[in-house]
Each structure stands twice: as structure tokens, then as C-alpha cells.
Length: 306
Ligand SMILES: *[C@@H]1O[C@H](CO)[C@@H](O)[C@H](O)[C@H]1NC(C)=O
Ligand SMILES: *[C@@H]1O[C@H](CO)[C@@H](O)[C@H](O)[C@H]1NC(C)=O
Ligand SMILES: *[C@@H]1O[C@H](CO)[C@@H](O)[C@H](O)[C@H]1NC(C)=O
Ligand SMILES: *[C@@H]1O[C@H](CO)[C@@H](O)[C@H](O)[C@H]1NC(C)=O
Ligand SMILES: *[C@@H]1O[C@H](CO)[C@@H](O)[C@H](O)[C@H]1NC(C)=O
Ligand SMILES: *[C@@H]1O[C@H](CO)[C@@H](O)[C@H](O)[C@H]1NC(C)=O
Ligand SMILES: *[C@@H]1O[C@H](CO)[C@@H](O)[C@H](O)[C@H]1NC(C)=O
Ligand SMILES: *[C@@H]1O[C@H](CO)[C@@H](O)[C@H](O)[C@H]1NC(C)=O
Ligand SMILES: *[C@@H]1O[C@H](CO)[C@@H](O)[C@H](O)[C@H]1NC(C)=O
Image (cartoon, rainbow, N blue to C red; front, side, top):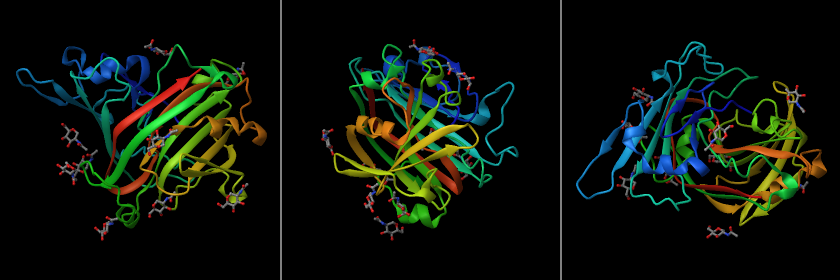
């Protein structure tokens, strides 16, 4: 539903909005190796030692960028919110590695307006230019292997304590976000595509409802032990139809092929076999939290086989 911004180890393509992306796929080695000589600005520090792999954490805080023209964060014109993303890379990472570098996001935003409640979608975007855009009928698998935590404060939590998040009034989700379109080029755009398909693995707060909740569950499907329910409806802001598969419990670890969730949509007026998948990312939609929260993704593999 939201804009994408790109970030790689070698150069910054400045965010068009508030989203911060981490390249996976083709570009992943640059992220993994964390080569300081190509690291650019943005702060961060490294741990150096003779004969040891160099582990580097780079920190990206949107406020530190001189984005011109600065588009403003969604629904936060007064600049009351805050978001920083850390990526920890290691020179010891092999080129055959399929997992993304570990990353975390610390954020805090006040509540937004009802029609634009999401302030940011810090995410890791799959970049597989040889494979996607791909027509749905050609997609053999949409693999996701992820472990994440969410917690209060400016530090990484090893466990997610939903009771604490709920008590603090955190409104956020953890989701895969995909876009489809009949037109190949449009499928790569979060605004020009025809369909948004989300898979929610976690959700906290009363403001975090899937579009179409009121019309009830349209389908159910389980993948590797996680039960998902489908909701859908139109996004009035973009004219897109939004399909949301919501896990019936907060799923902090998931391994499986998401293809069935997408191929079941045609019978619900969703993308058909000819539609292109042009965008796939994993992240967290940040709605609001009065205190800082930290989202941590130590393990993430996404892959599309087509
Ligand atoms: C988190 O909270 C501290 C104050 O405790 C603040 O200085 C910081 O800017 C906040 N935001 C982030 C993204 O860390
Ligand atoms: C992949 O395609 C995008 C969009 O055309 C481009 O910005 C990016 O640089 C490409 N990445 C690679 C690794 O070729
Ligand atoms: C992110 O990196 C900065 C700078 O190294 C550090 O101060 C901060 O604690 C890190 N945040 C998390 C959540 O680890
Ligand atoms: C998470 O686990 C690591 C290693 O087991 C430990 O050093 C760290 O203190 C833990 N962090 C928290 C917030 O409990
Ligand atoms: C979550 O945190 C609360 C308060 O700190 C604690 O009472 C509760 O046991 C925790 N829950 C879990 C599952 O750890
Ligand atoms: C691509 O998206 C634009 C903007 O929504 C739309 O005007 C155009 O008709 C689309 N192209 C095709 C071929 O569907
Ligand atoms: C989905 O599952 C729920 C219970 O888990 C059930 O109440 C509902 O009827 C199912 N809906 C469909 C469309 O299968
Ligand atoms: C996640 O945990 C929170 C707090 O316990 C709860 O309110 C929410 O419904 C859970 N989400 C799901 C999808 O189970
Ligand atoms: C199911 O999940 C487990 C981990 O929970 C993983 O080891 C296994 O490979 C997954 N199975 C499939 C078919 O993805």
C-alpha cells in the first residue's frame, strides 16, 4: 500500500517517502558483506579486529537524510515521530548465503488520521530482477523463512511479549506485502498496481484491522501449521483491491511457501494467472506507539521461483 525506498550497501537511493528497504536477492551480497568502503554515510560503526570477520552496523534515521523535496511522512507533518533502521553485516558472510543481514527498526509515532493511519513500512524488499515481475501462472514458489521479535524500548528483544505491547498501546503489524497487476511495469509500483496482497504474521492494537474486516472471513488456509484467514476490500486511497491473509495468532517464526495464499485469490476477484507479481517485501506497518518500539528480524529468507 505504501511507497518504497531503496537502500543498498553501495549507494543510497533516498526514500520517496518514509519506507526504508533492504535489498535482498541480487544485491544481497553487498548488504551481507557490509563493505565499509562502499558504505556511505548514515552513521553506524564497525567492530574491527585482526583475523576476525568485520561486523558492521549501519544506522539509517530518516531525519538525518536531506531528502529534497522532503515529502513528509504520512500523516506526520508536524514531525512528531521517529524511525531508525539498523543493518548488521559481516564480511564473513558467504556469497551463497540466502539469509538477509539482520536488521532492526526502532520507531515511535503518534496516531495518524483514520484514512491514513500507517506512518511507515520499514521493510526488506525482495530484489530479484531476473525473476520478478513474474506471471502468477509461472510462479512455482513464494518462499518465506522468517523469525522476528517486537518489543518496547530502544533495544532488541529476544522474545515478543504481546501483553506488554498491547498494554503500551502499540498499533502495528508484521507483514509480507506484495503487489500484482495485469500490466508488467505497473506491477512493480505500489500505487499503479491493481492488487495489494498482504500476509500478516503479527498484529497489535485496535487500529490494526485488515481492509474488509466488516464483511467477514472469505477463505481460510493453513500453511505449515499457521492458520490464515482472508479478508478483502478496496483501498479508497489507491483504487486497489487489498487482500489480507491474517494469521490467527502472532507468528514470530514462519517457514513455508505462500503460493497457495496468492493462487486462491482469483476465485475472489483477485489476480489471475496472467497477473504479474512485481513487488514483494517483508516488514512492519507502523501505525502508532507512544513509546519507542523495536522490531527485529534476525532471520529472513524470501525467494520467488518462476
Ligand atoms: C527513542 O527514545 C529516545 C529517548 O529515550 C530518543 O532519544 C530516540 O530518538 C527515540 N527514537 C529512536 C528511533 O530511537
Ligand atoms: C533492479 O531493478 C530496479 C528497478 O528497475 C533497479 O533500480 C535496480 O538497480 C535493479 N537491481 C539490480 C541489482 O540490477
Ligand atoms: C542501532 O545502532 C545504533 C548505533 O550503533 C545503536 O545506538 C542502537 O542501539 C541500535 N539499535 C538497536 C535496536 O540495536
Ligand atoms: C538476548 O539473548 C542474548 C544472548 O542469549 C543476551 O545476551 C541478551 O541480553 C538478550 N537480550 C535481552 C533483551 O534479553
Ligand atoms: C510479559 O511481561 C509481563 C510484564 O512484564 C509479565 O508479567 C509476563 O509474564 C510476560 N509474558 C511472557 C509470556 O513472558
Ligand atoms: C498503469 O497504471 C497507470 C496508473 O494507474 C494507469 O493509468 C495505466 O493505465 C496502467 N497501465 C496499464 C497498461 O494498465
Ligand atoms: C474460516 O474458519 C472460521 C473458523 O476458523 C470459520 O468460522 C469460517 O466459517 C471459515 N470461513 C470460510 C469462508 O471458510
Ligand atoms: C497478538 O497479540 C495481541 C496481544 O496479546 C493480541 O491482541 C492480538 O490479537 C494477537 N494477534 C493475533 C493475530 O493473534
Ligand atoms: C515447516 O516449518 C519448519 C520449522 O517450523 C521447517 O523446518 C520446515 O521446513 C517447514 N516446512 C516446509 C514445508 O516449509
